[in-house]
Amino acid sequence: MNVKEATAKRIELLCKERGIAYNALANICGLTPSTIYSIFDPKRKDISLSTVKKICDGFEITLGEFFAHNLFDVLEQEIR
Image 1 (tube, rainbow, N blue to C red):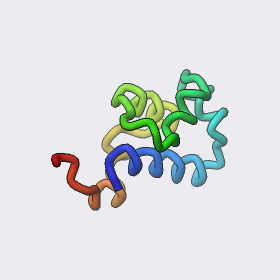
Image 2 (cartoon, one colour):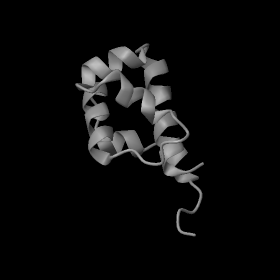
Image 3 (cartoon, rainbow, N blue to C red):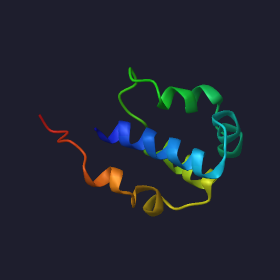
């Protein structure tokens, strides 16, 4: 799993935990639904940190809390 996939999975898990639909998350974060849905698109290679920060703000968590998950402990090497 790479960092983009782990980030998308973490967002998915937080939405499931909190019972928040992706459209609702977009509204809470001040993002467009297409931005949220594009995060889950395998063709999209990167997610900006500012987008992740807005999502964290919507979940009312810090970036530290977001990334303090075991998904980010087992990432594959990005340098090739």
